[in-house]
Length: 176
Length: 134
Image (cartoon, rainbow over all chains, first blue to last red; front, side, top):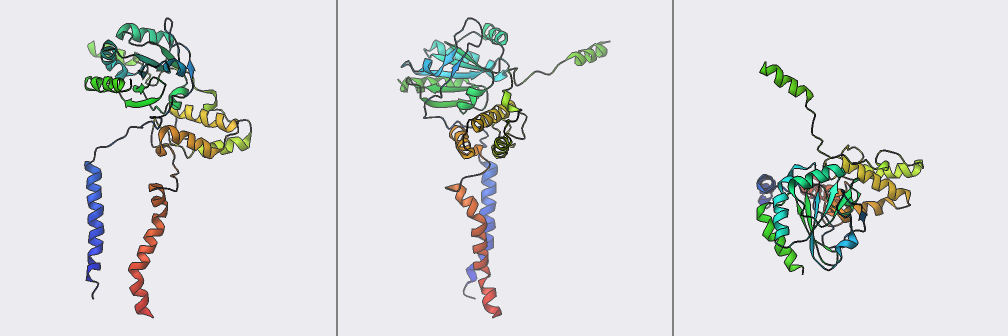
């Protein structure tokens, strides 16, 4: 039979699938839900203050020409406590940070701020997660880089570690 | 004595609330008054993925974010939005991944066409058998 190469076809298919499965085992897994809002304008929103003594947050507040960070956090979220020193370092390096507190109580936010310090300019309260949904955010903490005209430039998912601080500062610098 | 004390401590321990204590949106768990609207909202909710508990649809999930997503779907349906436009609204925020019904284009098209492609390949491989029998 002159089609003898055909008998190798099943082996080739199985070898291809086997290689694919091994790649699937080795390749790093990405379970994160990335926002599709990166590159788009912030959605319209106006949130009340998250606790006494702070100001609420609207999308208009972030359109004042200064690039800034938008930190999505909650007092009940453990990684948010872990990233507090990094937010502090970012603020000391000149970054402006606004925040949205997710499903939080005013007294809990106040306790969180007095324990870990307040690096935020404004803190809006998103008690029903409605704005979180509009931002394409899937959890806490997340940090967005927002341009001076209110465009979402970058989304950092999870807590900010020490090694992320220079990267975020660089993104803010290049947004100027 | 110490054992008893420790056991008593365990008794009064309460689990930490990991999802915070905000209110649940009204439309998360309440049906729309119009049965036809509720039916189309439910149909859509079964084909949207919960972004918090990834494997479940927002209709099946008890997660807070699923409740917020259900409320958003019902609200938009009630205001006269088409279900497919709401699906696109979700896709615009979370990517194609949020929909359980992949679109018939790009990689999605390959997915839909796969059964047909496999059938054609099988027929092509088996064509010799048909020829010999006649």
